[in-house]
Image 1 (spheres, rainbow, N blue to C red):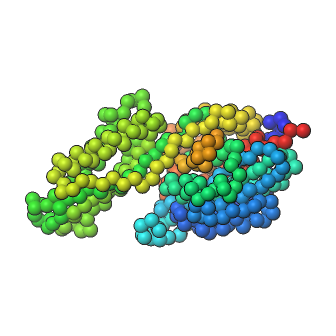
Image 2: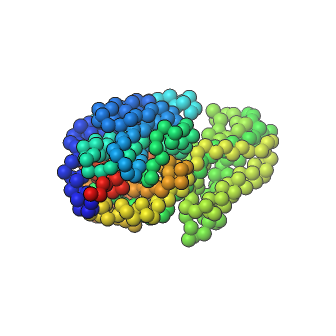
Image 3: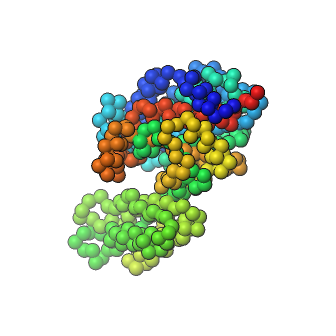
Length: 423
């Protein structure tokens, strides 16, 4: 089927997105933390059941959900959306802003929760695309899998689903496709062949000292000073050990020690996040972190070795050339603003595990959610970095349209590109 016909097929059969706007508002107001996405998964399952086309498989790797629509012989395509929110207190001021607080099963602490990374958009778009694809089922042949993944933010969900026997429950796909909303102008969409997103490694580092009274520091080994030295020294890894032609990020996102000002603690905890874009640099940076932490502890006379506990690991997201090239003509035809050479993401994803675990090709694209008028004003003033909230910000608030339309169309268009039945 010609690409122009695919575009016409999508435009002519797109469901009324009004109800999906309301669904999005509901999801946005009711986020759930990673590995605790019970109600979000139940909502998605309920919508799929109403379509009366999918075999539904629930509770995979936690709250993971997969719907399988077998529509004759042909390729098998998997479309993925992630579901989890973040421990962020929302400050958007939206009438449907989250006021949710949840006890985090990971540490037992009650936290504010927000969809600060747009996973509510992803779920909404995949459900709308599922309705569209069911509506046009006479125009394609094959098997459609819609997968709703938990715990992306902790790099745990995709792996958990695979290890829980995902592909014993559903067919192994021929191609795995996904998307992410980003702080670009709404209506814009883009992808690239090759590396699409960086790898990410996170650690909890515990430094051990000897506690005591704040008035007698000479009788203690102060882990706060030790931690301060480690934090400063870690900043030199990128500036002094990574080539200017390469890319890496080392961020210390949390430093915790002690409970009050007149007690020197006996330990300090540092949480570190690392981003890299090639395997060699990744190993070099991780080795440098271990070296620096160990050396600073020795220099401080620490009574025991530090501990470095991995807390998450995101793989490199690499877009398969053949799959991504196949999507470029229909995307260019359908979308007014499409960039086939978009910059790679500094962020990371566990999406590709759904494909690489089965040696199947993947392709991942991004689309914008910033109000076009707000974007144009910020761009004109040269203030897009200052005035446009980014993912994980307490002010991250995608505009409803054309964001939902673009996300819905992209998933449906990508699926039919591989599922279209040739007469």
